[in-house]
Figure (cartoon, rainbow, N blue to C red):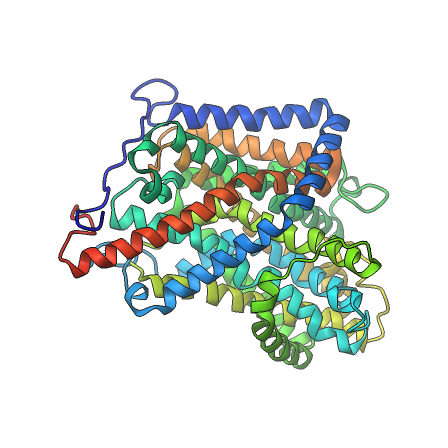
Length: 548
């Protein structure tokens, strides 16, 4: 009730001694068993695993596509609404005297690197190029593939998938956790976001189940991201001439190449995670943000900046105007060629992305909450939704716009579009900088990709450990950090080896479904908490903890 202070103490049982000292055994052991079982299943019975995962994926896309679409729309509307409303936008994520721990640059660098960094290098070229070939506008006959009238639609769909909706998924989880952790002194773990609904019952099996779902979703969501990154990392090494053995005859990563990449990436990630947020992760985030701006400046000078900036202006305007409709559009298979094609496209693109962002949300959300103490809700939403979305739009138009301009007006034919998505950026660099100069930029991209991969993986390892430790921000137990580093390597490597990116994609879409329900409940719980806290403040009732 709003006439008394809210719940400000949620007891989560943790072991007091032994191997799991400081950890909740129910969450830590169960999540390890589930992830280990997935690894064993994928490696020992690859054909059965692929068959079952494909069957579950088909059912999910048929029966839950609209759920994903409406859920993500709810997340965005809620974040924007809380930021815009005067009474809620000014509320601080913490006590009145709390100040942000990190500078704006470090804050933005860490959340951007953990949230989308890897995907930016792969998809800033690949996604606009794909939609330049085909998208719903082309399917409906409103534009023509690879034609000038399809440039703006290509960016509308790219912005839809990488813009406000994507970041709202992360922001909602982070906002919920930061609100309850820093205003009510509750543990920084997923279950705390549901206290307005379940209360002290979250100390028991309901809370354990919520945290286990979050851990499994995180591992699968991060595995998807690392899977894309590993392929591009190997492609980059091949491009700069390091070992023919890292790719197969088809130009795809070989088994040895995948293992080589994972040893480097997850080894460095585990060491960085052991050093904590304030050291390794912050240092790497600042480096990859600096290198990202350098690469962006390169395309601003040597790419097609006028074409890109024009696409940015027209694409953003059309995207913002169309966003209310795009958020709630569901295409169903109706037996017609067009209807079936639109349904298949939405399942393969929008639904996949919404599942990916949801699976990624517990990891990025906990991380955002961890670094956002002392920010107001309005400042948080601007920094966690609006600014990174604009950064994505600029990247996609300057980098991807150069690829489209070279294809449309530069006479390169299908040199870029015909390459695999992991190779398109490197191919474009070779075309822009002939006579070997493209090699230098390829080296920079490989270094940048490595920093993004390490930042993402080490942040994920640290967050999974935090959830397992009942929200303890600096849990002991280095061996547990090492376990999750190895487990993440095996999930990525095992699924890549037995079924490629498709196997990871299928497992991730399935794993995201349970957490999507948790996120919707978190949104409802946050609304309930904020409304009651506003009433409490108006009535002089305590709504923020008073512990220093």
